[in-house]
Amino acid sequence: MFSILVVTVFLASCLAMPIKDPYSYSSAVGQGGGTPFASYGEGHITGVRVWETNNNYYYYYYYYYYNSIAYISGFQLRYGSTWSPVFGREGGEKQEMELFNDEAIVEVSGKYNPADYICYLVLTTNMGRTLSAGQPSQVSFNFYPANMGNELRLLSGRFNGAGITSIGAHWGLVYMERAGNSTLDTALETVTPTYS
Image (cartoon, rainbow, N blue to C red; front, side, top):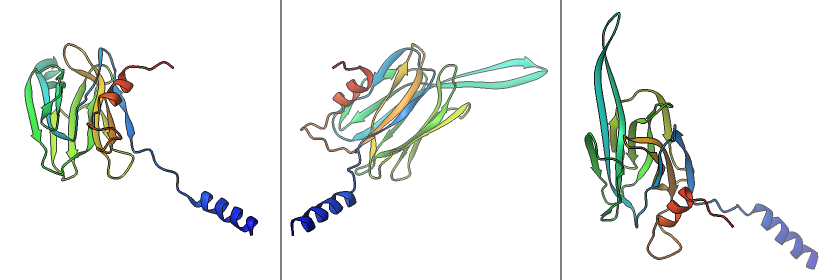
């Protein structure tokens, strides 16, 4: 009888599914020079502001050719009713989107120049709405959560005096173990190494 119990417990433990980590990270893209940042706040992300800088110029190469150098100069996220600090700078044209109730950002994509800035940024929600800023040129990237039902919790990366030089996305569930639902601890762990 005891051996049947042991075998049953052993088989049940073999069939048990491992618990997935409810968080995932999309590795940063871009050259990564400048000051590190990580957005933080309490609750769901309820709004986004992105600033883009367009430097249009002409240059001569056999014919006059119009060229546009655009990049993301800064961004800001709203958690609940509170806006985060601006990461980067508030230069250029501002794009803004307020999220509806039960709407969440589920994809971050765009393009980056490996030599300098994030050139193009697209934030897509679970309702199919998008906010896009910059010009679609250079190398593509596409971030999305590893687990079904997760949403964007914070963005991290680096910026310098002109714009965003690298960006990564952190995904997770909105509820947290502690009261307050703060992403500050996750943000600090991402940017500041901890030594044990």
